[in-house]
Image (cartoon, rainbow over all chains, first blue to last red; front, side):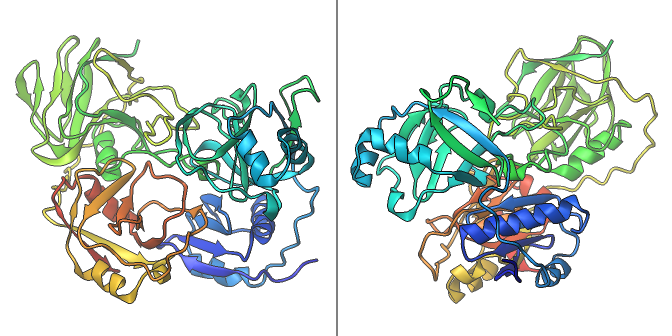
Length: 220
Length: 285
């Protein structure tokens, strides 16, 4: 299915355009279309393309108004479920909030692992810290609130949930998310010396696998 | 052989900065780079360096450096006394620092951030194409500590043309031209009038992430939570206390508080030199 995107554009200063979409799914589709057009040279020069929860920021644009007018003619295909790179992340489901999350989901802790690994997640956007991806893919009934009191220290590799998102902390920081597990080797999440510094870039699909399922840390 | 600078006195906060780290905002990487970019570029030009060569950015109290080989340096940006082995030296113009002599960048007499450029540039290891210290996410070299050794690159060998150096003074009043949006509609009409008519003051809690202000709070019309969205340099974000924060180079790349307006980038150099207590006015334009 294709069609003109139901989008709203908002100027962000003189050289940026914030494009607002109705939901995360259409934001992902629009973001993919922006990247496709940039790859084929069909996009005016843009310095930064920054997706958000329901927005895509196009920053460093010489004429944002002209770009906004052009967007109305875009044909944006729906994003196919199997579109994009896949990364597998090994998890030990042993987080300190696993029992709480199991309670909120109405299942046992073992079933939290089974449910979380059964879903395909996708990086919607990054922020908070380099390489910290906000992963969509949890159905609404599995959304959980942040903890009432944030932790002063969440360890690197913590696998966490908050609202509609899953995430893996690339490094130790304070944090208020519910910790359900651990990625034993979080090193690959962020390595600025590598060609692709972040493992979890916007648009990447993510599958969590339990430590028993495979022996290697990360594939993709 | 290239020179190395021994940090004799690191000052309140001295970081390596260049033109910044572009093109990685979608990974959560701030732009970073010199807050007073025109001062960095001018100091470099006076030495025949690339305008975006890495320099040292000091904060209020300057720093002191001892090269192991003779270097030529320019101290610009915030006005301050400059000495070489205790003898007064030029501010805002090339200074020869002999091997083993101490270049002292004194406490700012006007402005906040002085820039120390050295012929050849600071040769710290680049991360994602930039040598800048990013204080929000900890990329790039750590802030200088006493005793740290800073590598210098090879001078280009070209002779800098004499430039009539137009160093601007720090603002007595910081006037920030803004365009409203992208989330001006999240605020009550009275808040937009307040933004462009009230006088704010630079808060002492300002840093490289943001220039915080003190003044009348801006009241929101929509009280819900804004889903995280991308943020531009110069964004005027309004946190729950209602006092606008102007995002500077180490700002987070996405955020969930509404941005009422965006400051034009050329005005941010003056914001970098506005000391705590400086009056701030926002004007439409």
